[in-house]
Image (cartoon, rainbow, N blue to C red; front, side, top):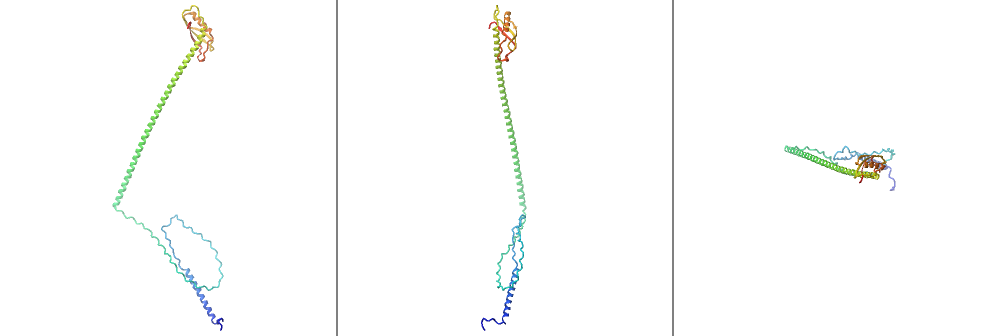
Length: 290
């Protein structure tokens, strides 16, 4: 019998059945392992908070879920193939135990103070209140004293200002009085000077008339001494003599008549340079010999 000859027909069915049984057992073991792996409980992780979040703490935004994709079409059944033996499960790593939650702090009430401490606290509070009252009273007295000093200073400043105003007004009145007196003196001097100038101008004007009349005077014979006659003359604005009448006689009728004739003969009489000196009525005095 050749070594490469096929086995007998009686041995083939038994080998195929054994292989099929092994494949089914492996497939069943894989299914059991997969089911037990999926149903293993997941570890619980606890997060410990030191304090509760405030009302303003906004919860973290959750990402929007991605739209679900349509499930793929079921694959066509494929005859199972023999799979290799599964690897033994790896040992699980020990996870750290969750931290225990902190115990809430309980505020213990303060121990009651003894009566001696209570009395001491009351005495301290009373002394502090008395000290504050004394400080406030002293502050009020200082404010009142400062206000009083301010009033005195204000009154003194106002009195000094009033005194300065009174002195300034008196000085101004004295200055005005001095100016008025100086002005009055100047006015009087000016008036006196004007009167003197007018008097001199009037004397010059009268002298011109007397010289004009004397140039026309004819001495009568037999006149003795130096007689003086006074004549009242009425003239027109142009100097023309209207009349010449004797107002005071010289005692010599011949000399008086000679003076009247001389005034009429001198018409028109000289006019003054200042027309304000002109007068229609003139009283002239004449002597025989100057």
